[in-house]
Amino acid sequence: MAQVHGRDNIRTYRKPLNINLGMMIFLAIFIYIIICIVMSLNQKKIVPYEVKIGSLSTDNLYTGMAIRQETVINSEYAGYINYYAREGERVGCYNLVCTVDETGQLKDMISEQNAENSALSDTDLREVKAGIINFRSGFQKQNFDSVYDIKYELEGTVLKLANINVLQNMEALNSTGNGIVNLCRSPQSGIISYFTDGFEAVTPETVTQADFEREYQKTNLIGNELVSPGDPIYKLSTNENWSVIIPVTRTKAAELEEAEYVKVKFLKDQNESWGEVRIWDKGADGVFAQLSFTNSMISFVNERFLDIELIMERQSGLKVPKSAITTKEFFLVEKEYVTKGGNTGGYGVLRETAGENGQLTTEFVATQIYHETDTDYYLDNSALRVGDHIVKPESSETYTISRSATLKGVYNINKGYADFKEIQILYDDNEEYAIIKSNTTYGLSEYDHIVLDAQSVDLNEFIYE
Image 1 (tube, one colour):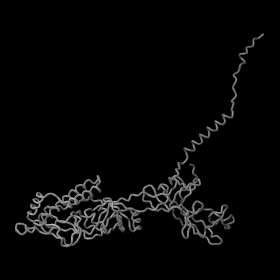
Image 2 (cartoon, one colour):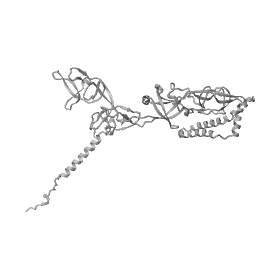
Image 3 (cartoon, helix red, strand yellow):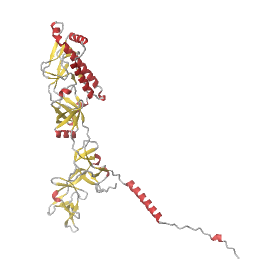
């Protein structure tokens, strides 16, 4: 009898795949995550911006050129000059301003007088202290060279104060016949200043951008110095009316011209004054604003370039980033050809079309209005084409679409898609933001959400935040 070996009949048992509900849920979630990751990688990055009321922070600090009616007085003699009128003092016609000592004896007399009596009176000391205090209030470290200007001014002030003490001895000196002291009197009344800089002849009519760019060189006129005939010895500012010229952009020029008058703060002493505005457009040579004043000239008679701040009330509005602003082209259609209709009762036009048998019919084409003038509507050009014929409602008159114009605007995303909104810019003299008019018929309102980068979307594109 044959022996049966059971081991030869053993087969491997395969466990059946047991798909339960939990595994199916896990698989569905995994697939959903993969899909979301792929979609997020391919999705545009749309950054929203919430519109709010605000104002621009603009730089209203300028360095202006002082323009005065200045007359440079030159010496008629050779010799040592000594001053008797203080800088910034008003002198009358034919008042003594300085002397020119041809022999130098008066110079020696002044030196002896100063050695014998070097003390200044309380009044003289107050004048010197006032000059130092004014210098400290307007001193800036980056303009350290102004220290030399105050040094020369103080030296001149002290010399003038000392010279007055020996003025009474001048007639005695001339009577000896050993010396000649020439008296230099003012040819007209005015404010005295003791410096020259080459800008005396500059006027608002002749000023250019090059005047602001060239190196400024101020020559102080010091007493007890040797002068020759024809050398400048002092200046007279003969009119209290003066002005400050500043270079500006054309946008700022238009704003200032509209204001007519602007409040100006002089940073040196923090005083404020109203200036009358006049704009000078020199084309390639620049645009300049002339700010004219009827007072305060004497306070700055010894300065040419002044640091000022324009204090202007800025109208507030909706503050939007400039990156959100774009332009879009629209069709111009006469208002009589726009009507309401369709299923929603919205705006649109009646477009003329030809049927299969060649018979002309009309169809209502819905379109959105983005702006209007007295005669025309700005219509979306996505549903219309150049050359389309539209019919005036309740008339047989037709109009061929051909005209177009552009608008500045932003993309509003309140409804989940990019909806173009026209804007009216009030101020844009800031690098990052512009101020636009709020609550216009086809524009924006506060708290609207717009696309931060207008180049990242297209009109009517759906937005997935």
